[in-house]
Length: 291
Image 1 (tube, one colour):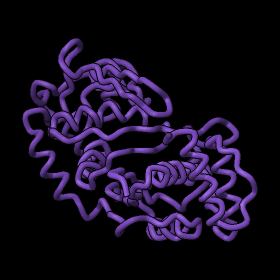
Image 2 (spheres, one colour):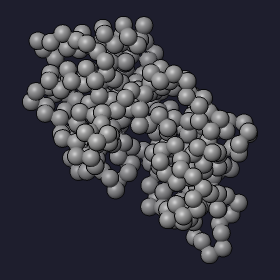
Image 3 (cartoon, helix red, strand yellow):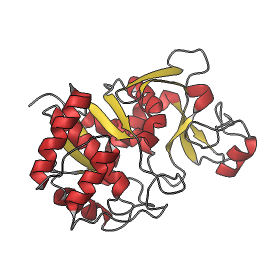
């Protein structure tokens, strides 16, 4: 077995669907093509969005599709002490912010890479008069300072450059409801699990520069990245529970697997069994991306 460690990290907001199967398949194929490990992490730190029973449903669907993970699945909700410890290490780079979402939107500074309003820096040098702490933000370097421009070498997309100050702004590490933000949790978990390669959907490409900056501040290794296209619905929205994605039909796993492989650009002959499918798919992936 190689030193490669990959992972699939679904948020349990609903059952596995065609879009999440594509992300799972890409990460699984890349791990198997490199003779590496494939971990599963349940990203349930956001308790507000977590749906009871969804994580168990996702694990059952993966197993029905013949995707066996290495070791026991990890649950973010049981790892909050790790996020608190990392946050404490970042104390010289963080500050309390008392701004509401409406106030940030009304500032009209601009739109960040992920579609959110850019933070205007109102509380960067201390809470404004009359404000109480709501969130905690990470201070990003100013334009032209070291690490303000992050370059990502993505194995699918190629070179991607993002300017943190102008395209992202100071971003939240701890939310107003006390929940640790995705950016911090994923960086801590990838490092703790020894993940060497992150394979996930293109919708998370804009998060990568922020995660690399956090890795540098925390002196953690930076994995290799590969972002695959996301499945969209008829009007171009990413397939998700919010956009009406249907649960995967696990009674016909081969049909779902072939559809996902076709979406990823793998032309495979019709497989007679799940084992046959994976043998063909791993060979095709290795030829295309892992060689």
